[in-house]
Amino acid sequence: MDLKQIFANNEKWIQEKLEVDKDYFNNLSKGQSPEVLYIGCSDSRVTAEELMGVNPGDVFVHRNIANMVPNTDLNVQSVLNFAIRHLEVKHAVVCGHYYCGGVKAAMQSADMGILNPWLRSIRDVYRLHQGELDSITDEEQRYKRLVELNVQEQCINVIKTAAVQKAVKERGLQVHGWVFDVKTGKLIDLKIDFESILEDIMKIYKIS
Ligand code: CO
Image 1 (tube, rainbow, N blue to C red):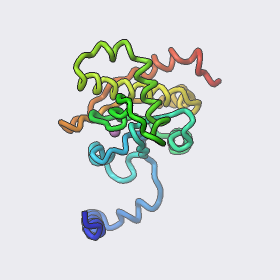
Image 2 (cartoon, rainbow, N blue to C red):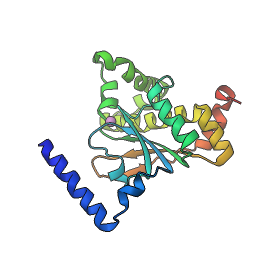
Image 3 (cartoon, helix red, strand yellow):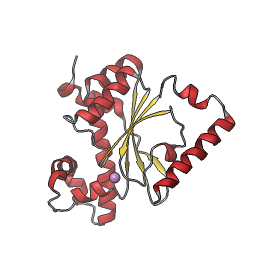
């Protein structure tokens, strides 16, 4: 890719936006009040805004390898905290995707160096659901199911946090688990029942 093209694209995009609304960028500069927090994978095929058909200002985005929400990752935890407590988003979304390289790597027994601890959190998801996953004989189906279960477990990690517990109770924040199918372009809602998950885990994770 010629990087000059990116700057040419940018100029074209500015003109297109200004033709519709001459104050477009001026208005953007005034601040943001997104209603959705999106935690997705860094995979280049899984764009956040484009696949959802949303505009700048609509969604607060965090992306990392395999859309993880590790309890001690200061990066994702800061994004989560800021989005919930300060931006007061109405929806927190964890979006995984089929054919995820991070999830695939966690299913193989390769030493990935610095990536090992990151991938280990996905292996933990496998261990938690080993019975179900091992019963799936088709490897592609097992891989797809692990993608879904990983989204579910990362949603649980979102729900565990004090900020989310409080926001669900006080202002009806909703937590969603989605999967993007790279092969069809379809966005699938896993219909995670965050309210019963919250109820189930409260005995252990209740903050106040
Ligand atoms: Co991925």
